[in-house]
Image (cartoon, rainbow, N blue to C red; front, side, top):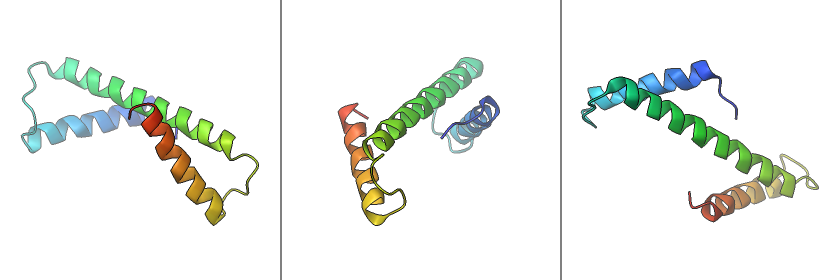
Amino acid sequence: MVFSEDRISNLSHEIMERFWRDDLADVADERRTLARVKQSLTSFFQVAEEIDETVRAKLRNRDQGSRDWDALYQKFYQDELARRGL
């Protein structure tokens, strides 16, 4: 799933708001923290997209949408996450 820069920015601001509202973290430098949250989200979504592409390549000879395909997709996705230490 590809997110636009605007969507990632919006999510980052929501996360920062949650930090403040729920007193989850003390943030000394809000701009730097916000930039780090954006960078983390961008990296996460890039890895998720890479994993999705890898898993879909493994399943290219199967009928997408079938129970078998869905079950294997979940299994391969989890295996790929574990392989990458995530």
